[in-house]
Length: 303
Image (spheres, one colour):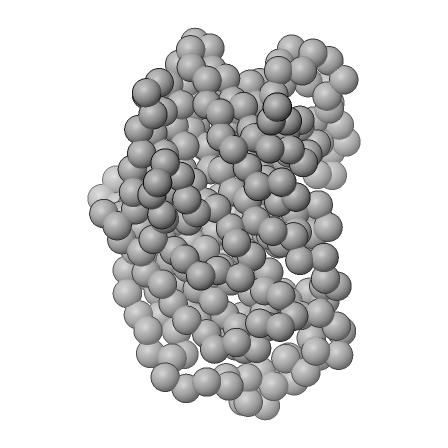
């Protein structure tokens, strides 16, 4: 019989400022790297106020990771040192493999009502692929399969496989799945997961019970201690559920529905040396990367 994943931890995202002055919410990052392997960071940059995001993320380097940007409102302009440039709009995804090194910028622009909504996930690269050739994948909304279950749940399949369909982003080193899931009220969502993979759900609207377990669960707010979570562990907007191991996740709703990002991947179990936008395996590799950035030899592959 399939084992339902229990909740390991619930984390409330916290406000922070990044780039040239972008106000966002950090869901997890540097202090939680062992918990979320192979993922490194998740940022939520939703806002209805232009000044919160308009200064953007000007030119900066990356090496050793992949960055996944998913827009749900507004638009984001981007460009890189290899000559790639473009715009992603609501529903689009940009999946960038930094590999051996890339310098790029991302500039959120919002929409006519100043709304900007999006998320950026960092995924680690295995040691064998840290210096792979960089590549961009701009994924348009219309290429992302939309799956509707008999119960009315809607799933946008960005990466992974479900119901005989394949997400448009493939051949990724950590075998990830990335889904945007909307479950209507008074419904149940059951989804099979790969045993041994890290699995998490980040709520972006509404609320739901992510595991029916009475008592004993605690919610962690980085830097703010812990508070009790009662009842069936009902989780709402701007909170993340990190699961224990198991074969499936079960999410149930009552009076309100829920929308969440469901993300999973195979842990690398490798050492991490991380500073700013560069993530390597050793401190020496990290120092080499920054030295190369300073002396102009950071880029290893020209377009």
